[in-house]
Image 1 (cartoon, rainbow, N blue to C red):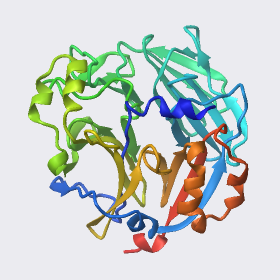
Image 2: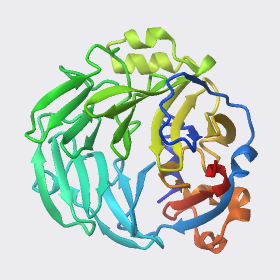
Image 3: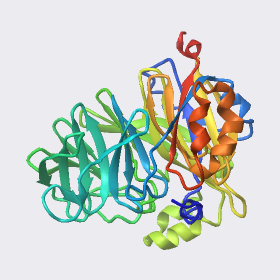
Length: 381
């Protein structure tokens, strides 16, 4: 896996992460939260208790493509690559390759592309676009069953009583941009029916949904809000003020997604792309396009109802920029490009409990998982 593979898509994605962690797990304050972008990386690193590295096994067969997703299970890591391999790779907690989940294809238990992935105890859920399927596997990759759905959008989510599927920027839906599909596979509820035309560039932000307990969160990217779905109702969880990085209103009047995207590139603008919640923390992801400049990555921490912000550097050069993938309790999980490992050492080795893991990593290696454990005293109030 060569460095050119990682750099070839930089013009498409310039990701910025914005994190908030709050001791108030039931917060639903919809007042605008002002985002700031100018503090140094020290604001974030000062919150770190320890760091653990996991170097994923490298081989010539199981090659992971650009900017994959990471999901943390109880006893293994799942890497979802929907760019190059279009496959799902499973590794143990030490980074040793275990197995793939399913394969590409149109047959039973196969998928054409991955537009949703979930871990439910001993079951893996995969949504396949184009053929509109939801498929169940065991963690070791055995096919259990599949079901056809009437439509699958950019991203989908499995519920105990049905499914949610989201149609974003350029994904035409005759009903609404967010659909609820019952277990009988009929569309029974439509949401965001009269919303603006343009929302997301297809394939750019593959992780729309997340959940905590019985609430599902949806990142409706070109809007400055985070949505929540609970008991059949859709509402706003948080509303952000991006200030000078707000998109002009004319952007939403375009019917052609390519024209809308080209228009947006004329302006500095921020977009929400990810949200994660645990019993300890809430994390929201934001990327910022700056015309004529490299995008930068900002982290924020919200505790005691005060937001703290930190700029950690450029996406193309900073190890943690754009790399936040999952969270468990007070731990954050990042995927880091192998060609950024030397800079990773400079920034985080002083917190690392196993720095020797990085010694064998080269530019040709697989990704490195970085588990950042935040200071527990942040969540004691």
